Length: 222
Image 1 (cartoon, helix red, strand yellow):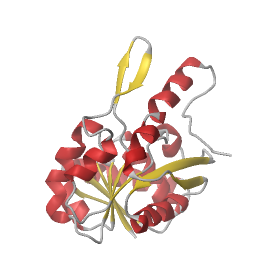
Image 2 (spheres, rainbow, N blue to C red):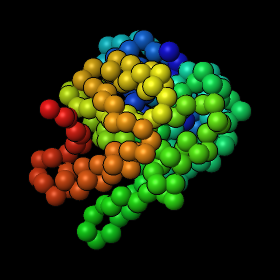
Image 3 (cartoon, rainbow, N blue to C red):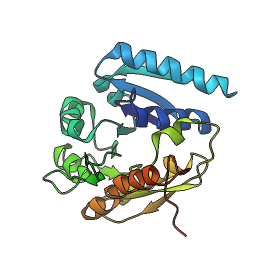
């Protein structure tokens, strides 16, 4: 499986890229609006994985070229960039691809972080509206702490919740999620449930910031 992380030079993209490169045999492709930034990030991630004892090849391309080369395309960009990013790569997507969004809309005030969905009701719904009609969309990886993902010495032992309308696409994303050691994928239903999943992200940040010794939190359902 070839996985492209658009906006893969950011924190979430880095964490997922490192985990897939370290734990799996999937081909990892880093995408960016700036191809030089994508190449540099790919080289840095490849070096990090090598330092942990695994030789792998990570490549970097401009976003549309990265998407064109992938089976699964992860929109690891901020929520206010997802629609523009989908528009920019739409011609590189087809019905055999799966489009994944881990973004959650948030805003911050003096009390902490709060869920702030777009007008579509959730970022996942926004992506589904922007995506080509025949391309399935799955919301996943919302509640994973980037710092914990990027630390290859850290055990995960956490869950990721998946939402989407296409069961085959959800199965594909569940498979690549569980290829990462210590990550379990759970089906949370259709895109109508995405707001509930996405809203966990600001909750986890607030809990981490208000309790000593709790950093890079995730969720685990028992």
